[in-house]
Length: 488
Ligand code: ADP
Image 1 (tube, rainbow, N blue to C red):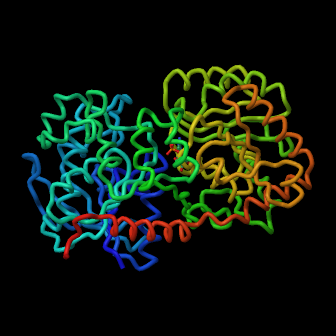
Image 2 (cartoon, protein in one colour; image 1 turned 180 degrees about the horizontal axis):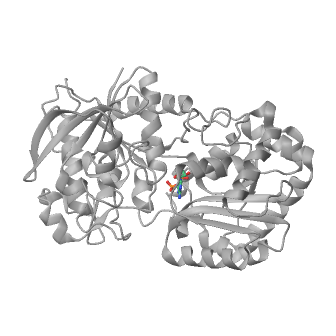
Image 3 (cartoon, rainbow, N blue to C red; image 1 turned 180 degrees about the vertical axis):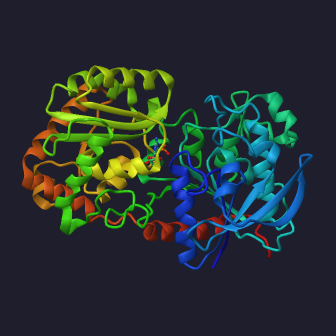
């Protein structure tokens, strides 16, 4: 049994902007089921405090001149003990954890997450008055990156694991900011937190953690190359002995077409024929003509370059010439939002766009569309293709990162041996995407092959149990690698 402090800037269902929240909402629960003493720690955003239910103040400490309280609760729907770091000046605000209501980054993000890191490190060292000592601190993404660095200042410390959910977000700030945070001057070094004359939060994790991992084996390899390394590939190659990849699981209770309360019609492998009821309802929701036959393609996600949204926009005028329809749910860069809205106005019968965030509609899209599109430029793991597989919605994906690790391309051989689960394409272009959609259309028109593809996906096991077991092994190896463990 290990005592694990799981640190994240978001966790579903308390607060979510992306895949990190799904992981932080599920992995601690899976670790708890494997009898680990796991505690989740995250900032007490206003939304979290409302959703957490009963909160008990359990400690109070002063960090960087700020009074901080720790509020204890359970992650809703689980037994996982959760500590919310309450510092209203920093976390009790409108907008999302990183952006103000106008979509601009909060100007004091460095101060906000540096304070969060200080608290995590104090809690892990049992210096917050909680009478609990961590064996492992599991940090996630740049917002927790300073923790492994700060813990090297302690004579004895817990082992540290740093998980990269997306290397593109690094937490970069100026030298002046570095000075204002009161970090030890020796951290300003290219072998520590300095990155091309800037402070890099993520380097705290990449340089100092006992073990680093990312959320798929392919992404773990890709980030060691200049193409995917965001300038950090050299460092990651240097640390390759400490670096591994573990594919994310999914919350199979939350994402289960057989019991999903968001759906007009539940279904499973044996009642797959009922899926079409969700399709018709979804078309109605998007004001598209109801049509059970035509291929309906879906997309959900952040409207940013990473997700290949520009390729979709480029391809749509050609796509709508084919016998298919397209629905999209997402928000992000304004120019993408307006280009998509414009296309929807030009092709009212074929394209449905919903700008915004809706958990319920996301479930309805996974169940209602025939195929799910993910033309990502890079994808550390990706969750929507996993949900799609489980919902009998074969995905069309670009063969990168976790998409390459979870979807088997339908070709003669894989269709024959029953391993095919979707369509994989490789080039980063609208032509390649169109070509993949054409291939999907031919598969879809062959009802027998299509059903085989749907069932093969639905049979896959992407539950957290296996991945959580891999994390336990990672924790063991981090503990072995820790040069100054506590209690020896
Ligand atoms: P990323 O973390 O890069 O955004 P992932 O595929 O790992 O991408 O996870 C995204 C998660 O956020 C998925 O659960 C997806 O369904 C959800 N999501 C993204 N955008 C929206 C949206 N507009 N409405 C509802 N859910 C969304």
